[in-house]
Image (tube, rainbow over all chains, first blue to last red; front, side, top):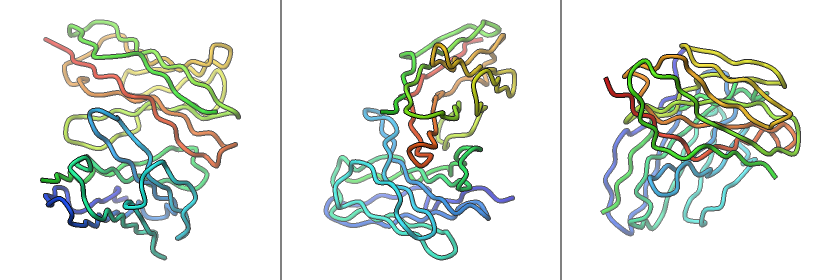
Length: 113
Length: 113
């Protein structure tokens, strides 16, 4: 079974630009969540999608948005990038029962310069 | 509300030493509990889990027991190896809040030969 695939692995953007990150969940998993990880703040929850609907949302500004497609693939978008958005962005998928926990991708390392 | 508290790191141990990483939680419902491990440059990997009180999760020599009376899920390993050097995250998933995940801040472990 293929794991959670995130693309790209590394990205360098300039302040003010926007970026789109992609996540393909494990086959059969309909729930996809996104996390931001930084040395100072640790793991912070961005949002969770299930069947194309956002079910939970963390405490991030509106510049951070996401969506999920009918095949469960998900994208997150960050507009008007700031230096503080530099982080490792992790995608995770799970079956909706959730008892088996998340399976995480390897992440996208975003650097804003 | 729900939260997870982990012991502060970093932790440095000699090879073959005994490891304990403390984790306590608060939850409104009856959560499942998890330990995740993150190796440098990678995403999080599920290490072990327990879904109800008194369950013991185990994997790769690591163990943790779900203690409802002390609201704890401490991670232990009898003899650590250099390859165990990583960051360890305790987490809970609470069905009463839609199985939303709550992560601890992570504990960095370094094992020296």
